[in-house]
Image (cartoon, rainbow over all chains, first blue to last red; front, side, top):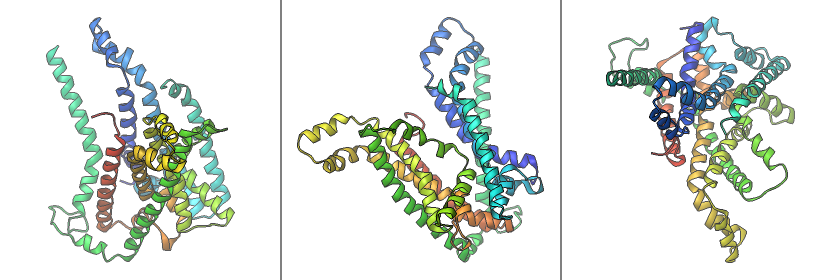
Length: 133
Length: 263
């Protein structure tokens, strides 16, 4: 409680379902006959996992990671409640600018910088995500 | 090989169990502690509903709860109406900028709420709306709209435009086509969209937090304020109620939207 690991555990708890859901949807989209074909030609389980399941589900896993990274990077409630004195994060700093210090221009600048980070991550992930189609 | 398979299966099951425990144990502990009489989570548990009784005497929380409910209902009505209309328009017509509009639907879902919330706060002040319930409703409608449009559009994909054309050729007016052909077909999608909108609004913390005023806050904001002042089991009690309500709404919505594949 009131430490950096507590914040991480709390955030993982909050956002784990999103990753499970996106990864599940990606796995469900894999054609089972591919796996059957590989098995009929004698591929061991490890090869099937590495050569078929992992590459085909990668877009879903990346989508899940992006989907989680984005809200977590802007979170301030979890660090505030679970972090105690260790809970100074980018999100809590922005919150302070708007709620406590009333330095809105600085808060807006910090928000905008965060938006730039988020957009950069979307741009970086988009080649992998496009393959999902 | 068989023994190996059985071992891997068992390992998978154990892992799944661990994940479920990790996800649900905190919620179960919280729900259990809301029925514990001790204020300091003493064990063994002594069953009591004292925290629920306290809850119903807490005027601030009750006012915030009613505020949450009516904001969520208003948001649902507005967002569902606008969203369903937008989805039908996107489905039926081609117009300039349509592709751009459809792409622009997704960033609001993906951008951190912290950014959306602070941006809305600054914008609402700049145009003179300021803070308060009106601002919260506007913000919630903006957040819920993309969800409604996406869900209703998904349902519309199973609808064939020939049905509309057939009705038109038989002399139905545009309004009659929408009312008697299109809407009945997408009704389940619209209901699912409405439930999502309700859940988005009711569970929304960040945007409400920046846009509400102390007298007119919503339940999550009030809970956050209470936790920062000092944790009491009353919060467990109110959170247990919220989780029960949210889960019911989500399960019903998932049933309508057929989430998570065929069964």
